[in-house]
Image 1: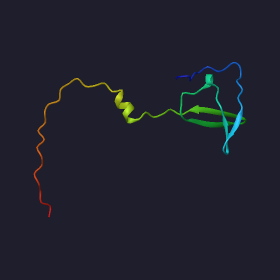
Image 2: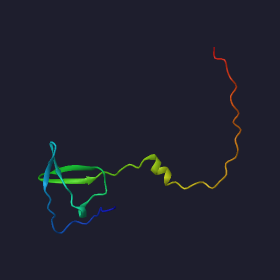
Image 3: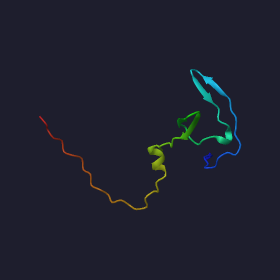
Image 4: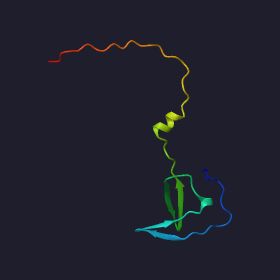
Length: 87
């Protein structure tokens, strides 16, 4: 769903603002949709600038992308430790 683009729109799109509880909200048109779950918002005079915040992948996602190792690991002797009286 990658819709981020460095292009600027030649013609403006219009959208209505609405209230969501005590917040003002904006429904973003599909063709301007951002591939993000969170945005940083900045105010520049009377303009609002939305910038997507990159999502940090989870450890499971990072591990899933790793290639599997084809080498065999040697057997390692791992005898149980002898009980030790600590008193």
